[in-house]
Length: 468
Image 1 (cartoon, one colour):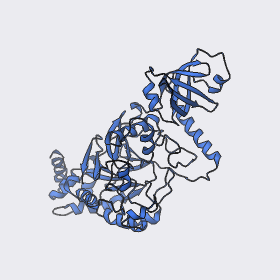
Image 2 (cartoon, one colour):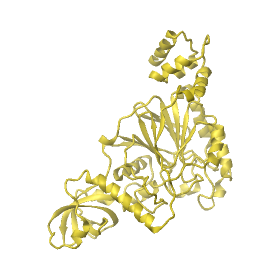
Image 3 (cartoon, one colour):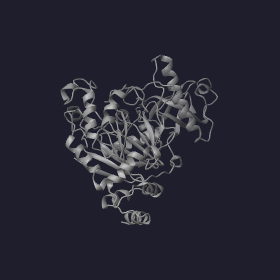
Image 4 (cartoon, one colour):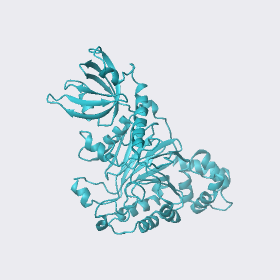
């Protein structure tokens, strides 16, 4: 009520009379943006909601009512030949970036591993190494054995069962870059501590914005199991007065079900043409109100390459969507967008399969284990920390590393929603609009259909809405 009174006060000061619908809508706009809108409204006895929406549509080119949407990270110049040296270069790039992050946090200069392998005089020395976990296993006495490698060589590291870092060592997956402090004994290191390159709360820049964002993924238009009733219910809600302050719809991959993604997929398709899947998706998204910006990144079901990072969906399909709703901003996977001061990282989340498979304690797939798996991405500062479980393209830059820390990490893929927080970063997995498929049933996953996470951009609080 306070917001509406303020709008009414500003409008009357300008001699403007607003309909109840226009007043309700304008109460979700704030500060300078509200004043700009009121200053440019047409001269009429009573101004309605359609007058305001018309001004928003026609005035964007002049900056009137323009949303504060910016793309902060967009993978570009993608494409490699697949030569062995490209993979070597990529892994070295990943190692050096993560190593440099660790060096800022350790108090001893790390020893190159080659110096330990060629020296017998270091027995009993307390030292630090930084390396990548090449392999690991459990010894008979339940100690954990790791082979850790840097650019000069490899060495065995042992975490004894009574070590206070045993549990962390047990959970660290292969390919992680870590720092280890311990005692050198006869060709191996008896570990005392372990450090991950994880984020810190100090790196999370505060940010806010007016309005709310609705976060979804894994809609799977074209599948026989697409829950169209639930999605249409969600679209109707976006058009309701209750959702008048929703300014963004973020789709984090798998808007369509695609073609040929897995064996015998055609048996589970209702629309067996990917172009027609986009046409149908466009018809549905045409119901999204025109003041809502749609941000869309692909997943593993879109008609783009499977290797990550994935480019944005090709124009031939985007044009179909944008003919139906011109407010679509296409992005690669992953990307970072700024909504005002709020930085949201979009990553479809295909690596969650490997993270949940290889880190103990993350099975079965539930809302809580999904969030914990996402927290491991932040601990390892890597959206795809385990190399080789799904296609990753060895680009000149590793776009999957978390070099800068977002306010929000938004994923999908596993069809189970989850909401949490880790060191000041909001973690959101938005579930699915696809009912249980035979494949999902075989995995024993209980899908969460029709959940939409609505993010308040002012304070990053969330509301999980159920449209099932």
